[in-house]
Length: 168
Image (cartoon, rainbow, N blue to C red; front, side, top):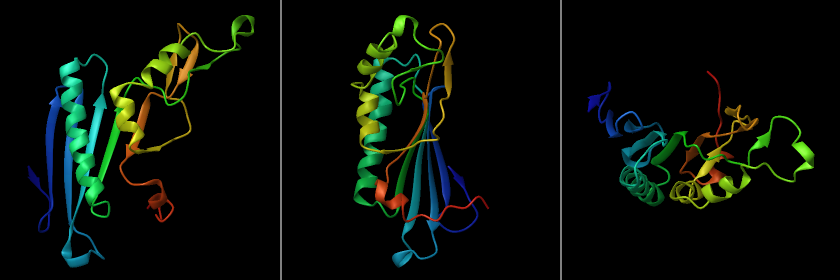
């Protein structure tokens, strides 16, 4: 645990799987406008799920579910952010070039549909995805692009309409 300047602020990092999954919990302390000096937390997961064993996947998903449960009870003070290279595209792969012979779907589409039933997707379905609206991966052997680097947050979508975001 590393303390940050000020009372009640800290950063705690836990390696869930070496080189594949890191959980960092940040306590921001009492933020201006907090009721009764309530503490604010960001629970961040950075994940690359390639090559994880079923046991490793289960452990990571269990920790994420636990954090989402806390966030669901205190949406105003607790935010869960899950980011990473999940190797699960948000949409079916798009051909980089026209499909040969006018095929109706990319040959990778059945694999995409299988991934939609994965335990990862079940976690994603409970969150809001922040979409950079750009593909992040090019598969040269299949000649298609997809978005496998993804960002999810625990806040309900309507909260995003209340935010005032700046680049300052």
